[in-house]
Image (cartoon, rainbow, N blue to C red; front, side, top):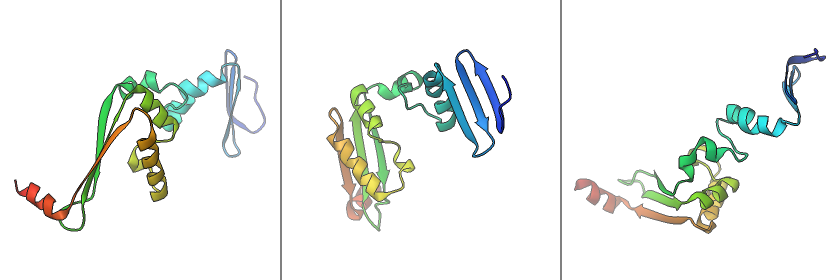
Length: 144
């Protein structure tokens, strides 16, 4: 590949050109194979996940019907233990991903969590359940 001014790196393969410029650094991807490169190489490498339609190839188990749960709180003294679960199938999983639903540990805003909770409950095909166990009941169950 011919050298470009201010380029740190450049590569060409088939109808794809990739150039990384020193300033920024910025990456310029050009050519007829750009979409495939972004979907199958760049995005999974940078984000650690694919978001442009490749998810079902990389993680087919995510799209099988399943039930996931998460819990928050301690329950024994200060407040309730809250356990939430959601059942999803392939269609509802795709809809949730497109709506921006992700692992709760990656969401830092309370407003965003409340919004995503609403999205999850309104998504067709998703079945949810939330259980709150207060301190008294928690301690009774813990003693068993």
